[in-house]
Length: 225
Image (cartoon, rainbow, N blue to C red; front, top):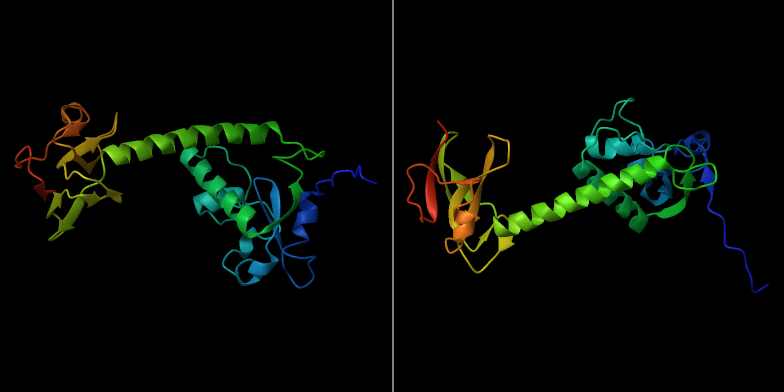
């Protein structure tokens, strides 16, 4: 027949998935991320018994990927309370498994219905992902405009910060001058390099000069005491 029916997506329940934990009497070696199930058999040294990631085998422990909480309560697919940045990191893990391992189905439960359709919970996570990606793009744009300074410390309380055409992982044609960049509503700051030819940036209320340092100096002493 030319009109072949599209192959149906395999659906597994939690009990079904638990049978693929890689133990000697198991059916194989699967894990799930955000309800998508992958065959990780070729990574048995990592996911099989004794492997560093064995705790993920036979279940969906999505939360643990980004929290590092490997306790029984941490090994869950419940993502409530996670930040948008953590959700972005989890989707990076999902992309890794999609690239490196064979997808074998969907897990019926929090993220996929008994018919294999996305649930409201998955849609909500995707909305948080969109917010996280927006924040990530804004952070990247800020880092490009205000790259981090170079720094060196002679001891725990004193050192210096300076700017060059390469700092904070950003190559550029300008050097810049060190400034303290404060986050809105926070007393914390990071050292950034600001273009001395950019008066708008230099006059930003979020930027402060270093004490005992000339305004346009490319290097400033730092004393934390």
